[in-house]
Length: 236
Image 1 (cartoon, rainbow, N blue to C red):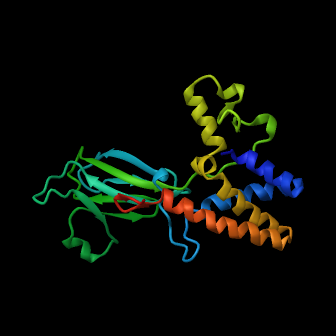
Image 2: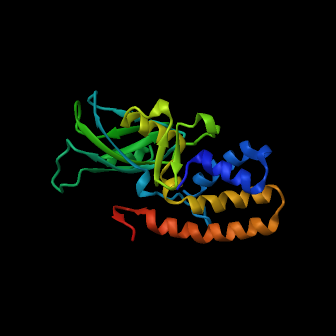
Image 3: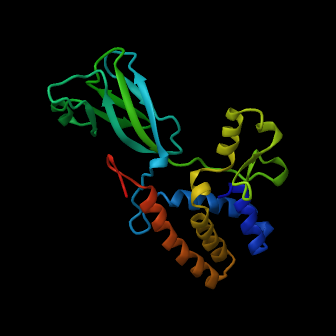
């Protein structure tokens, strides 16, 4: 349980390389992102904690589309449901397709063009479309100790906020989002070992790099089996 900046400081102190602080911060963001891919084939991993939902209201009869909110952290769509469509089968979930002539024979589909999704047969003007999609955690930045919006207090097992973010729950949430994420809070040991493996490799300490990477590889499997979302079912 930690924040981004605190973990950077921890590794800087352990390696005694304050000159590498910017690089260590970059390695930390890299480690968080790589935990969203399988180590063997690089397949994308969808975690339950990264699931987002949105409900759209179509403002045109046909050709309605949705811009991806933040393309830099977008993973992919899990499901699209046309809430205003009623058919005999009772199935109003749309299927993603690639634009082609074959779409003429398909109903209830959607497709992606650049950073925008387009929907077909959604029910016309004012139709409701429900989305479930995944996002990566946002990239975090290093804050010097005297300017951190929040820090994790290990003794209190809670965040401690700077004066500027301590007025209300909305500001506290902003502070947490700026300084940490669910992986750093719940799986900091995994991330720490992955980060150390990269830093030790950078400074040519191969023995420690191998040890950290071996432990990282073992621990990330526990993260994977505990947090992954598989289809419409929870993975246990």
